[in-house]
Image (cartoon, rainbow, N blue to C red):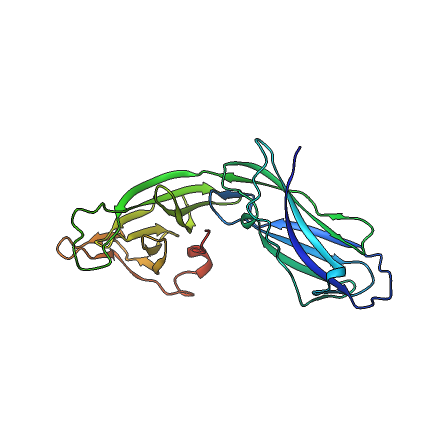
Length: 295
């Protein structure tokens, strides 16, 4: 099977240049998930343990450079395309004998991994002073499309007060997507137009009670209310570029139904039936949501 490889150059200089170091490296490759949604950043962690009995310095010496390259196989179709051949130098690192170092590499920078399918990745380390190449373990992962639970198209607000009569209104599409990452079922927000993905944001867990509530305000921003617990809800506001403008947690008032409310006169959107919750008292921050950007 044909492989496509991304090369990440590592300059390696030995502390004792007069010695012929027959280095041995132990490696472990990890991904943080088993499944990724399309357009999500896929980041690998490569842990290298120095078993050579000699300290190794990561530096700029051209004669003693090593390299890490990744080979990714598409298990169900053709292999992924190489996105970039740009090198990533890792410098000013000291790996003493018996120590280990973790390297964090964004695989999505080097490979086209947006297509739905199953993949397998491994890392290979080589160096002029090593007697052979060293391979990591292989890790399998999947890229999934997910299920769109809601989608709508909005127009872009004007940046000036002047009405641009006669000009076409640019659009953005908001989508809330449900998917399983191999451990949990999650909701995320995707913002796109016909030619570009502006962002992908993880909203929180799907706890199986009710789907996220959503409203669009007069500036085309999306307001989302997501249940995170029996009485706790996460509230988000995202703009047309998938920029998070507000995030808060609300606690449902006893005897009330918490929901989004729009004032028809002013167009203002707010949360009704609840009050802002207190972190540490009403909820633990980690259980509300993971809103890290995935693009």
